[in-house]
Image (cartoon, rainbow, N blue to C red; front, side, top):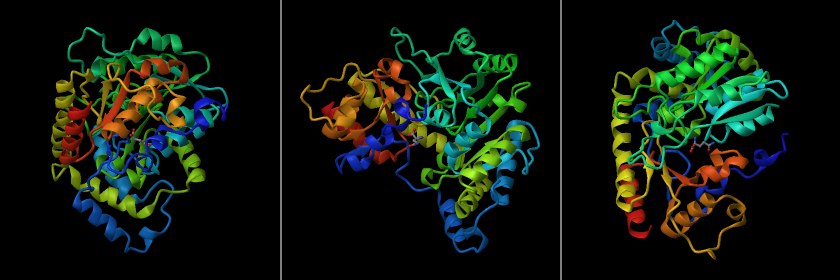
Amino acid sequence: RLKEGRALAEDVWSIYNVANLPADCINLGQGYMNFLPPKWVTEAASKALLGVTENHYSHPKGRMRLRQALKSMYSPLFNRDLDVESEILVTSGANEGQYSVFTAFLEQGDEVIMFEPFFDQYLPSITFNGGTPVYVPLHPPKADVKKPTSNQWTIDLAELRAAITPRTKMIIVNTPHNPVGKVFSRQELEGIAALAEEFNLLVMSDEVYETLTFDGEEHVRIATLPGMWDRTVTVGSAGKQFAATGWRVGWLIGPASIIRPTLAATTRIVFCTNSPLQEAAAAGIEEAEKRGYYAQQRTEYTERRKILTDVFDALGLTYSLPLGSYFILVDIRKVQFPDDFPFPPSVLGRARDFRVAWFIATEIGVSSIPVSEFYCEEHASIGEAFIRFSFCKDHETLHRAAERLQQKL
Ligand code: GLN
């Protein structure tokens, strides 16, 4: 199972890595920022490197200052007084936290349900831990919807119910969603929660884009719905909040019954997360709200989103306006490329969107990510209608990218 299909194949982030693309290609592919974290955060990072304990192992649960900061930030958001010893766990990025949850809870053959498209990393993280991924569609907006938003990608609770078997262990929720940008509504989450309760399932709620919702959209945490705290683990990320994706600092919040076994797994996988950047993440969280940082971030991202949507409007390309996250899905079925274009083998064997993304990166000079990667192999033909652009870039870069797309696409 480990060696099956996609799990050991080259991942999309490596294929479309800037190292493989022309040097002057503008990178709107992998979602990381081309600007610095806030100054008060980088200063805290520099300072931490000069401290003795900050250069050593931290407690596997995470450094106390960061756990305290997380407690202060999240207790009001989860409507409970979070316990820093048993309900908060710092992890080496959100990825490792999720992997550790799978390691702690999955038995061979356990099924994990996710909505498709899904963040690609879930699939191998589940199969490496002996689990079986099960897919329930997020249905794209109907063709006659004029200006679709990400929230018109919809779930069908009857399909979710039908996917549940005696082997189902867990449902993954991802809101705001990567790659769609969908922000799940309270009603949708209530429907998922009711099924989780009825069938006694765990929920892993990946909320790493929690601070990035737009147009007044409310971020609802499924763990706060009645009865859900005890079965839900929520995933967060310093990288997304503070423009520091390379730090690999993330966290899990949940009941002791989930956090304790996951702590055992994370302790054996990485032992602990790097100490100095935990201090910096703590400083970031301690100050962010006071400084109005999250509100300002939302404003800036709303402007960034518009730079791209303006050009897609001008080009007549259909997209789903993202109400959360920093990704935008564009329908590329109209985009043509020459049949004899020199595609590398890593792209040739894949769905059409891989070729479109490669063509746009190498001929037009703007990189993106093909969306069939966020579908299982059997469903790649649905995903190949789209490519994903990231708008976590400074305004100037987005304007340059928009200009290139406008002139050459
Ligand atoms: N979350 C990032 C994105 O979707 C990628 C993370 C990764 O490369 N594993 O672009």
